[in-house]
Each structure stands twice: as structure tokens, then as C-alpha cells.
Length: 300
Ligand SMILES: NC(=O)c1ccc[n+]([C@@H]2O[C@H](COP(=O)([O-])OP(=O)(O)OC[C@H]3O[C@@H](n4cnc5c(N)ncnc54)[C@H](O)[C@@H]3O)[C@@H](O)[C@H]2O)c1
Image (cartoon, rainbow, N blue to C red; front, side, top):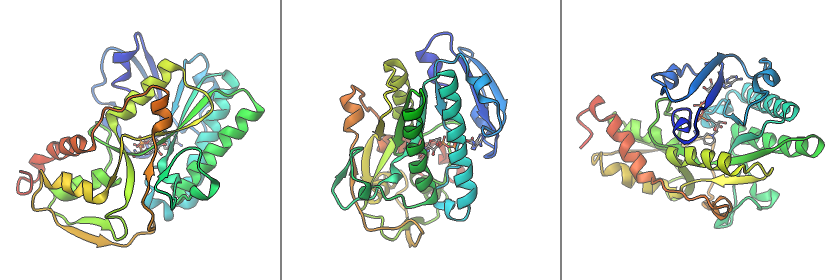
């Protein structure tokens, strides 16, 4: 996002706040000259946000502990961090009247139906992890705050990100599978997941959505699903096999397991005139290519 937005908006000044808890310094390497960047190494919870945010055109709230599968062991820490950062950011945006993009996750869903969208019933919101539970709580907080105070915001429920970026991480499904494939390890597939459909979002589509929201000033207080496509794990395995033919699979148990398979609909954002142009297959190919020389025996 911080690399691509300067191509789309002239004379951009980007202020970034991160406490570096994830050590992802590489995200800041070789930033383009076309924008003015200003990095503040601070915790969002203790930072004086209103004075930092005041006068800005918009705030993109990305700060979170993001390992959903690993969130069972650190439920309290995660909830405190993710919920409180959202509260602080939203309250600051409200005070200085800056529009806010809040990122939630499609992992809030769980339905017996074939398709689920943002208008679903409460029963179809079934967060399977402390991470997803907290996302839902954050969403509700923003809706409540906007009823009491001035707050222009949008909540985007992102699908799992795939694709290459300098700060990419490898604990989510697609990237983790690419890593395991190149390292000659068996893919650890959740026992129930092979034929379950889940939503994925390519990094290019994620950035384009953010630019689209800014251009369109789509701060309408609504929730939007943002995903390139729904795929099964079987699809992902088939995509990976094209570059790693000797791929092996191992089935494992996890805390996040159910029998549900469903498509998450992206109709609402498409109806607002956004066009998705990414491809999960292409993003997998690029991720594997990035790693190709790390273990020559497996990539072909
Ligand atoms: N990547 C995905 O697949 C995905 C999918 C759906 C939603 N999301 C959401 O998108 C947002 C960004 O995700 P990401 O993949 O870029 O995550 P990330 O882990 O790469 O980045 C999150 C950043 O937040 C920082 N951070 C956490 N707590 C902080 C605090 N209290 N103060 C300051 N900095 C703090 C971390 O240091 C890290 O750099 C998150 O809200 C995440 O839940 C991501």
C-alpha cells in the first residue's frame, strides 16, 4: 500500500505508525521517492493519535496481531491489542474528523448456506478464532461509535491475502503452503479443509480496493467483503503442483475446524463499481518463483 499509493495520488505524505512487534523492518526498505514518508515507531494504544491524525485526508488502520491460528494461545493479548488499537484509532478519527478504513476479515463468517454476504443473519457470523471474534467486536464498536459521534468509516472484510510484497508473512494458508512446497515439506492441510471453499484476496486487488475507497470517498459506515475469489484447498494444491510437481500433503488437526463450505460474496463492492483483476493462481506462481532458488530440488 505504502509503495503503490504514491503512483495514484500526487504529492502524497504518508505517516506510518508501527511498534515493530513483528520486526518487519523490510517493509520500509527502498521506499519510492515519489511520496514523503514519515515513520513513527510507537504503539498505537499509547500514541497521541489525535495530534498525529489531525489534518489528514484519511486513516488506514492496519495495526493488529494477525496470526489467527496462533491466536488461541494468546487470546487476551490479542483481544486487548486489536480491540484497543481499533478503539483508539476510531475515537481519534472521530475527534479530528478524519475518514477511516478499518480492516476486518472474512473469517467472521460460518454458514450452512452456499453463499454468505454482508446482510447475513447473526447465526451466520461464526468466528472460529479469538482473532476473528475480536474483529467482529471491533466492527460493532465502530457502528456504535458512529451512532453516538461523528465518524466517517468503512469496514472491509478482507479475504486471506496472497501475493508478493516486501513485508509479506508466511503464517496464512497460501503463503505457508508455498513455503512448505519449496522447502520439500509436506503441506499441512487441515483435515476438514480440502474441499472447503474460502475467500482469498490478491495483494494487488487489496491495494486497488484501498485506492478505490479513497477516490470514491466510500466512507458510508457500511461493511464490504473484499475478496478476489473463493477457492478450495484442493484448488490451491493444484496451482502449487504446476511449479512443484513432487508436492506432498499431510493432514493435520487444528483448533479452527468445521465442516462448512461456502462462497463469500463480493457483490456489494462490485456493485459500487469496483473491479477485481487479480488471480490466486498467478499470485501463487509469483510467490513460488520468489523462493525458487532457496531450494532448487523442488521448483520446476
Ligand atoms: N493479511 C491477511 O491475510 C489479512 C486478511 C484479512 C484481514 N487482514 C487485516 O489487515 C490488517 C493488516 O494485516 P497485515 O497482513 O498487513 O498484518 P501484519 O501482521 O503484516 O501487520 C500488522 C502490523 O501491525 C503492527 N502492530 C500490531 N499492534 C500494534 C500496536 N499496538 N501499535 C503499533 N503497531 C502495531 C505490527 O507490528 C505489524 O507491523 C490487520 O488488521 C489484519 O487483521 C489481513
